[in-house]
Length: 272
Image (cartoon, rainbow, N blue to C red; front, side, top):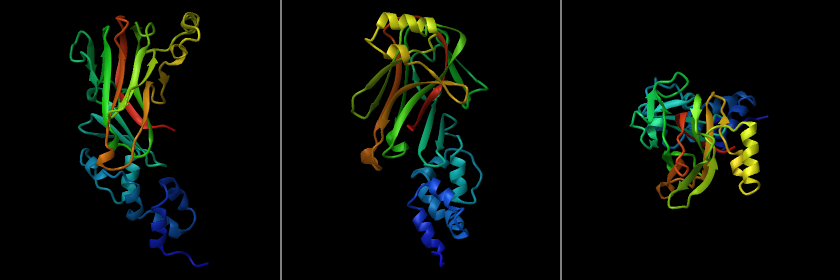
């Protein structure tokens, strides 16, 4: 059986996905060689990858495929204030904005917040809430920095210290806003409720607001916890589709003193 020329196979693979290209290497040596070509992996790399790699220190890459594999790992960019990553099989983009990239009310006041290096953080520092009755955390990103035509979720990455207080009395408000669109509002507690408090909430609220009984931080695989702030859709490619996404968590209505949470950042990743 006569095989297709390598250049023809490479052209076909460039219209598939990274997952297809990885798996096709087992078909034949022609597919393996074609699947290693810069022509194919140039199509899978993010459109702005040249500007991206100019913001972090790295060695030289022998191929576009090697560069792609490198970007599948968490890469610190923008002077260590953001993390960039692409999914190995889909090529979809994930960003993590560090706590320093966020707007946190009174985070420059030492008696409210404390900045420090943490060995469990991927950034140089995280911030711990000492005490406040006005919690407001906001992050921003452009849809043009993300993968086009993709559903995304935004997640506040945080931890609860052993002596935390005031986190499970009043739910915080979470929301995401894209461009001039409206806010998609939700609620979440800042810590997980124990069984007794879950029961009390159900008895008090009944069926009036089921969110108060179930929205709370979830444990991540890296040892941190996350609160979903909301989700949104990116549009097509091009400047005309580039919109600002604002993501926020606020708890300012209860005037309840609270403290003991550590904020690492906000992750913006494709929804599965």
